[in-house]
Length: 164
Image (cartoon, rainbow, N blue to C red; front, side):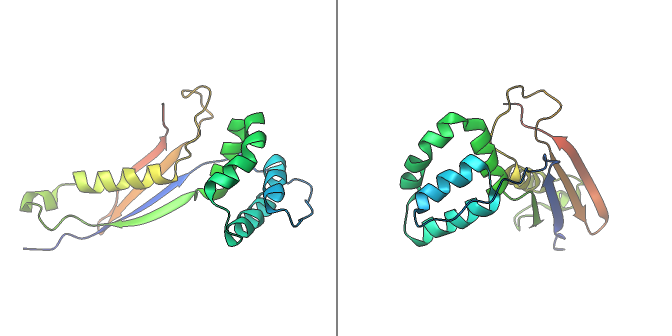
């Protein structure tokens, strides 16, 4: 029985709005204070430095969430969108394989359930989780997907958006 060839998958989301550069923040010895200041300023560099320091100093997620509660409550969507854009990768790539127990005919179909499921799981893994006010608006986040097999591109999906 011939082994099915893997398909490569490339996914991306975007375009995203360019991030404004905030005025540099002075780093202090107070890690949680630095996290608050970086989040208020939406300063990606200072935010990442403060998150790294907080992890090294042993702060857990609950302590960090409690420290950021006031800042987040002032503008929750902006804060969560900033954190999503900072921590969730804008692109992903995966190599998908057919299961070993598939029937012969399943190896020869153009769009197998296994490949489509793997593709969409990868797409949604990079898709931002912050909902928009109007999920049907033109400016909502969109994801794009391309599945490539040994025969070339077999599927392109562009402009996929969550409507929840």
